[in-house]
Image (cartoon, rainbow, N blue to C red; front, side):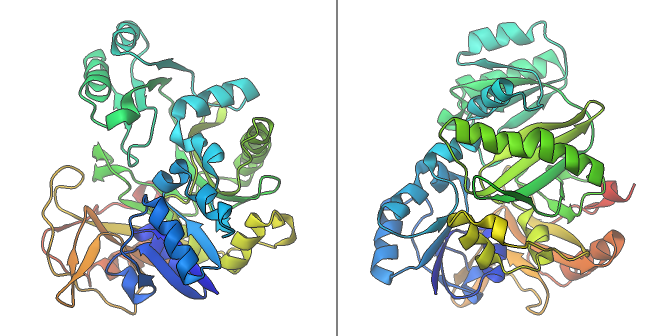
Length: 411
C-alpha cells in the first residue's frame, strides 16, 4: 500500500515509524528520509499535494499538522478519491478558532474556563484593567503552539494584547483574541481516536511547554513528554469520557462538523474536576512521540477504521510500559538560534528527528527542536533514565535540553 504522510517534524517521524507500507513524506526531513521517501512539497501546498497523490497512485493519506487540516487538505484529497486520516476543514475549526471552541463548549455545557472574546485591542485593554489576575490571553487562530500568554500582572496583560493585536506577533491569527480565566491544577494531554461516533482515548501524557528547567522561560512547541500521566486516574478518565469527550463529539455532530481523526484534549484537573484548556485537531507534538511507541494495535488498521467509521470494531490496545521523550533543541530556541551543525546519533535507539536536513550526505540541524530521544521502561523513573542516556549519545553543536523532564510526574 502506498501511504502519504503530510508534515515534517518529530510527530510525523513517529507516525511514519508506526506505519507499514510504501511511505512518502511531504516534505519530511533529513532524518525521516531513513524511513520514508521524502518529497519536496510543503505541507500547505495543497494543490501540489493532490497532484502528487494522483500521479503516484497514493492509496491512503495521513494529514498530520494543523495548518493543512485547517486549510482543507483532507477535503481536497477526498474530492479526488483518496481516503485520509484527519478531520475535514469544517471539523478542524475546533483548533483553527479558539473562539469557536469556547463558544461551542459554553453552548453544550462542556467544562472549561470562563472567557471573553475580543476583536479589537481597545475593548480588550479595558477588560483587563479590572479583571481578575492572573489571566490567560490566547490568539484565536493557529500560532505554532505558542499563541497562549499567561499574564501575572495587568501590565503583562496589556503588553500581551498589544503584541498580539497591534504588533501582529502571530499575524492574522491575532485579529481576534480569547481572554480566559486562569485555572490551577495539573495539566493532562489526552489524544483520542474518533470516527465521529466512537471515541477511543490513547495513553495520557504530560507535556513540558516551557523552555527552561523548573517550568520557567518562554512557551515552546514542547520540550518533552512522559506517558502515562499519573494525575490521570481511572476516576478522572471516566469523568472526562462522560463530561468532555463524548459531549464534544456530539456537539460537533450537532453543528454538522463531524470530527474524524485524532482529537487532542488539553485538560486541567482543577478542584472542580477536569476542564478543557484547548482542543487540537491532530496528534500532539511531542505527545505522539511517547504515545505511539506504547501502541500494540496496528496503527494503519486503526486509521482506516476511523476513515471508514468502524472504529467500534477495532480493539485498540496499549502496553503497560512508561515512555519519556526528551527534546534536544538548538540553544536559544524558541527565539533566536543557529543551525547547520552536523548531527550524529545512535541509529539503534528510539529517536525521532524533527529539525534536520541532509547536506552533502551529512545530517545537519535545521530547526529549533532538533530531535526527541525516547526511553521506554516498566517504570516512569526508568523511562526517564533511558531517555537521558540516549540523549547523552547524541551530538551537535549548541545542543540544549531541559534536565528535568518527568520530574513533576514523579512527585
